[in-house]
Picture 1 (cartoon, rainbow, N blue to C red):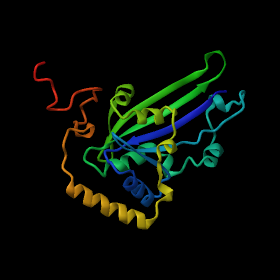
Picture 2: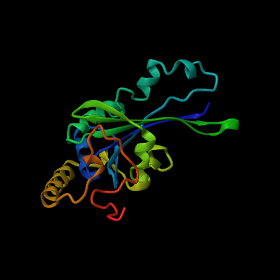
Picture 3: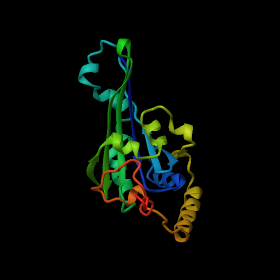
Picture 4: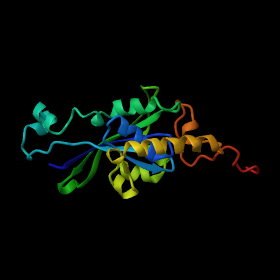
Length: 212
């Protein structure tokens, strides 16, 4: 049987992963946060039960005891709930990228499976987004993490469980001061309306060739 790979990543519009880690720590969420050019990315590797090749659970799925042992009831494992919570913190919402892959073995070795993307706004599940188109329009770091080519640790991820209360207060004050002094200079992925699909390599407003 091939190895199952399950993880989720939540793309947020925040630019400071330390602040997002502090928020997650306050909610007792066990996640990693990576800073990217497209926003702070929240990543969680999900436990997947492994069975012998001929185990009937490969067909029927895990039983209750398996899920309890793997911590299925952990709030951190509930990707939609975590995405809904984070989406309440910003008017732009967040994007949940859910990954369910498998490493095939034998003559057809390789990666196969499903990557899904859905926007969450105000705590509610919103429009689905084409995962391939979305990943192509974002910082390549995100695709590498989502597909497992790299890990969050490879990019200096901040682990929410490592954040102390004192650090939370400090980072929150720094973020507040930073927001007060910064002015937006260009349109960001998060400035698009929820119904707008991301378009890779589209020019920023005001940068079109006047001769074209």
